[in-house]
Image 1 (tube, rainbow, N blue to C red):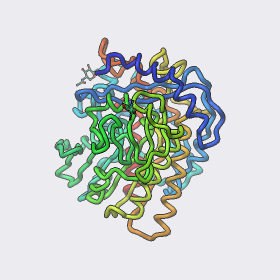
Image 2 (image 1 turned 90 degrees about the vertical axis):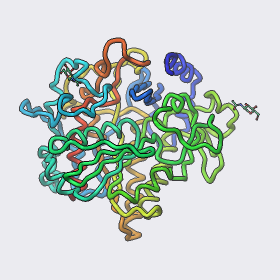
Image 3 (image 1 turned 180 degrees about the vertical axis):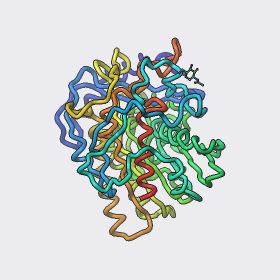
Image 4 (image 1 turned 45 degrees about the horizontal axis):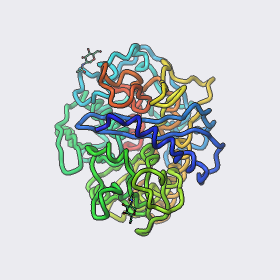
Length: 442
Ligand SMILES: *[C@@H]1O[C@H](CO)[C@@H](O)[C@H](O)[C@H]1NC(C)=O
Ligand SMILES: *[C@@H]1O[C@H](CO)[C@@H](O)[C@H](O)[C@H]1NC(C)=O
């Protein structure tokens, strides 16, 4: 399915699509040369991630901590530091949780040091109001908070990793039953009357593969290779009914999206083409729309989905959580030309954490759209609560938490060698469950 992926990606890059769109970026940032394309693949149950990181370009300095101050949460846990604690033990291992997928199983693939499991996030003391937050995750407390409820995660493989992190952590107290229903995966904790569901979509809004024809609907994760090769048609102003219509059956919905927006796409509003990204890519040649930036597309997509949820348009009455960008950490190249994430420690306070474009732009768009939607939700006085789960600043400081070379066994890498985008399980993304608990129990 993906043997010539590298060649294909290089082809896309040399057509200069990334360079062109940058000039159309809507948000003013320091100009950054270089290219970045991210793709996620599920091929016959195996996840293979391909990422084109920044090409030998200096990252754009971005202060995420100040702009990332959580909007509508009582506690701002986004500023703080990772503190070394050798006594820390993960809530689960690859031996106790059978849901860990191969590409996340850094223990199995021999990540040389497990020191990355010995860091605890400590929010700044100045941020009072965090209460017991970031104490060790308490599965019993979590189950008490969610008894009789259900949570739906909607997103790509990073959302899936969060789901598995939560499911594995809760498995300390109860091993769930796995179920499948059309398009959804579900883990059912019967004794605690709690269900976790996952719906795979890279975009949140209505989309389909351009090559599939106008009447088709979006493909599932099994066709990620084709989605990667793209382009896709993205209807920026229409929520994806496939999951949106199911949202009302859940008490919580956790949304996320970012890297796939870098893929070639044709953008629609009101059913009409308004622009495209990577227009020179195969199949998009006939599109004459203007180049629009992925950042802009993502901004409009989140605006669409967050506001639909906030207005309760699809009968949703629960809490919608936006989980912000989890940054990648490729150094000295991209995924395909020797980029690696060799760090073995988090970045300390003395180090400036920098986020590259377009991730920084995605992050700004997410936070700003969240604030606007939360304001609208408050104004309308409806039942829906909107919460921001801002993981960007803390994850930016964890270049050591990716699989790197240890996301696969020897000879198993399908088109990429080093994964500096996904996170090891167990690993630093387990802290997301602590943030989630704070939101759900708040
Ligand atoms: C778990 O990791 C260990 C190494 O720490 C490895 O030997 C073992 O095969 C792994 N087990 C599974 C089920 O992944
Ligand atoms: C472009 O449009 C022409 C005529 O409508 C069509 O025959 C051709 O297949 C299209 N090319 C692509 C790449 O979609």
